[in-house]
Amino acid sequence: MITTDSDLCRSASVLVVDDESGMRSFLQKALQKHFGLVEVAGSVEIAEELRKRCHFDLLIVDVKLPGRSGIEWHEALQDPNRHSDVIFMTAYAELDTAIQALRAGAADFILKPFRLEQMMNAVKRVLQRRLLARENFLLRREVTRYIAADTPMLGDSSVIKRLEAVIQRVAPTPSPVLIEGESGTGKELVARSLHNQSGRDGAFVAINCGAIAPDLLEAELFGHTKGAFTGADRAREGLFSYAAGGTLFLDEIGEMPLAMQAKLLRALEQKSIRPVGSEREVPTNVRILAATNRTLSEEVQQQQFREDLYFRLNVLTLTLPPLRERSEDIPQLAHFFSRRLSEDLGLPAVPFSHEDLRVMQAHHWPGNIRELKNFIERCILLGHLPLDELQPRDTANAQGGGYPSCWPLEEVEKRHILRVLDACEGNKSAAARQLGIARKTLDRKLSGWQEGRDDMTGTE
Image 1 (cartoon, rainbow, N blue to C red):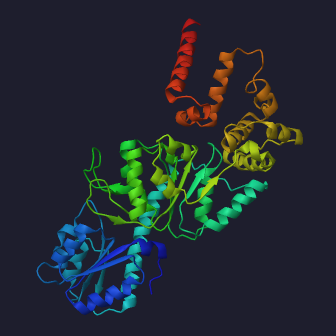
Image 2 (cartoon, rainbow, N blue to C red; image 1 turned 45 degrees about the vertical axis):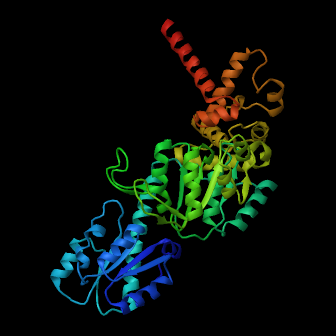
Image 3 (cartoon, helix red, strand yellow; image 1 turned 30 degrees about the vertical axis):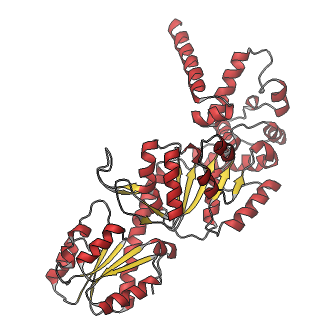
């Protein structure tokens, strides 16, 4: 019987087209055990009506049909907007027929009569090719982006142990999980851990909702047809499709525009999506994980986030602690980053003394684990520990952020803003939220400092 990935099968849809009622019934009963949707039709005309209402991942079509033959079903075989794999069946072992079928775009060709095992093996091969194409797309996508979650969950603190226990318990379930925490606390790492322990066969697909232009986010998630918008020179599947049978991680969900939130809610409730420019619904089988460095309950009260979507996502919320609240984990994290980064950079690791680690544990770490990693990388590049960059939390509270008391307030503000911006890896929206100021205010200050530097450069 079919042995391909079970979650992929359950999310796939099949249409069988054959004028023999016995063959239709036989294949429908066999395929329904493995696929989420199996429809049958006795002619191309009936099949095309079904295809207009629903997208099918796989078409199993008899060549000889009343009226138009299967090979003449041009609407399905040449549809540029919604591709379906096709397996042709025929009782006539003619070379010309086989050539015509392959030219028409057949993924496989089976002679009647056949054993069920033959058909299932053909289906398996087709689905595996489809899965491989999706995995290749995801691999190319991952290679072009920095994966911050390339770090195992480290730490022996009680809060991390409790977090690991919850992850282990909820990972195998299909329930959505909302992950909250400050920037740099490892939210994507937790999402990947949930996926890795879920047992799901499909891929882990991550998207930063704040990094995609609002007018392109829908197409990125749901896919689009050819010509759906300017620049859409070909049809493309969305990330919901590439995550079939797996996990879709919606990072920075709080940045999603309200209009898109409504469309996402509908997709989650209907368990189907509609590609941009298409009138067809495509069934989905995806586990949703979402993350934010905002407090979504407050965003709901301020009408910045849809209440119904919040309740849909908030089945379980995992709140990640900032690094300053788990300082006992810093030595383990520092040693790990030192080993990993020294290998990546081809430079010797910098040793840490007990006193060095105590200084690191006393630092506030506003950028959390991400800031610690950047600091360790800087240590390796410099060949020593710039501990003067790190200020104890008590000193920070006493001196307004860990800066010398002789500094003017304007300089303290500037250094603090630049440090937070660096901890947020240049993400101005995240830095503005952490600083408690408007994004426009941050832009204005940065612009003023840049103009000041330009003026100084011009006078020298």
